[in-house]
Length: 226
Image (cartoon, rainbow, N blue to C red; front, side, top):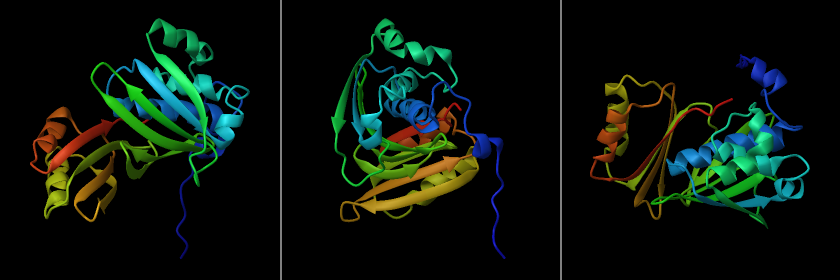
């Protein structure tokens, strides 16, 4: 028996947005939102590397303004996206766009490097069409998530019991796991975990996870603002 997927209004008509293209505008906003969330603070400087179609049509489709709008944490239907360059100046965000070849990746790909006063973040993702996105690299580690759920990223030492430690913290905070991906990198010495959950884990839960001896980096990302 073939499994069927329920379709939402978003699947049929796409996101409510400002701009001519869901791929180049709405998707770009969502990618910017997530890049800011990974930094965890207001960015003061960002380098934005545009690949493929994103690089070729950035100005014509408003991709550049949409990416900055997302970094300013605007929603995709916010009229102020059209003025995002001016808003960035007002908020003290310095930005630079570069055209690059990121290799064998989706044509609507972008790579962010962001800085705040005391933090640095690196995020790469792609706009897949219809407002759908995929984040595929965070802080130099390969990941995979789309912002449709609250997302918990954990990087640390690989050792027995790591998955149980995290799932135990989620269960104790009554957080339901929608999707979970766990990988071992660098000759199996490093664990990279992606937990997509129905609700974001509260701060007491992330504190408990950060306190685990094997954990090196934790990031809680809320569901993107559609």
